[in-house]
Length: 374
Image 1 (cartoon, rainbow, N blue to C red):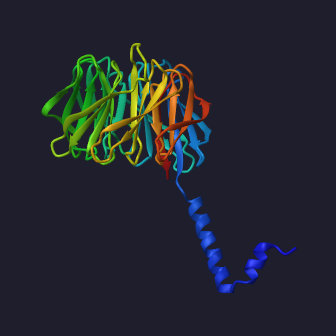
Image 2: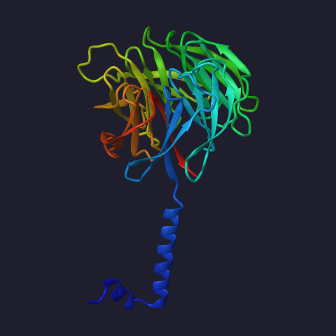
Image 3: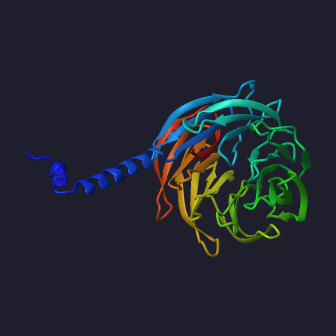
């Protein structure tokens, strides 16, 4: 019996065959050169980072466990940050001596190689680089302060150039999309502090107004900007609220437009909300809640910025941290009390989450970062 491919080839001219083979080679070459996606999980009690490779179908493959050299005592959490050029991963150590551990990211394998350690001003609950990758912002929950550390050319953190007292329990400290402002949540004082940022000098100055007051005993914790830069979304730890704000980029002003909840329907206990992230296309928003061990999902209206609740799904025990991959197709959540990570598929039309598979991590995982390489 004649091979069907041979029959097709027999009916084609040499030029057509050559063109077809060229297109096939280009397609295979493009596929071979496609970016690979890696996930990094910060593990507080084992003082290390679990590295995974994410496949097209959502499967995770363990790649490496990278320990923190010179760190023996566990901290309460392990915040992570990746530089904008994807060359360096920084981990915050919350046991004394407080320091930031820098790793080079191998662009081919995603594996981490230790570069060096630098000093932090206190035990920092949150770290993040500015949009240019020149400084590291950090927030101290117990120390009631925020700080700015320069980043060396090799990615190692230098001594802080500014340490600024805040209200109670600074928790997140993140730059605006245009890198002109930096905002700090104060969970215990129910406010957001606003600073102007000079990317050239790396210096912060108080913005006007400097503080945005939020509902009493709500506990503003983490926040995320919409990819279009027009909206901000914030999770409140103490009452489980998710708030939406209009964001005015010129002056860095926030204006609340909606308040909903991350709590499952019928819940009547004490809330303990944790993390919040938005898909890269800005269509769906997700929040984690630790008392109920759930992830809440929302649709985002592109025009108004307002949220419509999709529903909640069960997840890892005590889900302090989670994140969304750069394609917006998968969400990975970790559980501090389950020492594991669960990956979910994000429905492209509804935003609903479907559990795919769970994986073991290090001890007390609390932070997830994704990156496309190279």
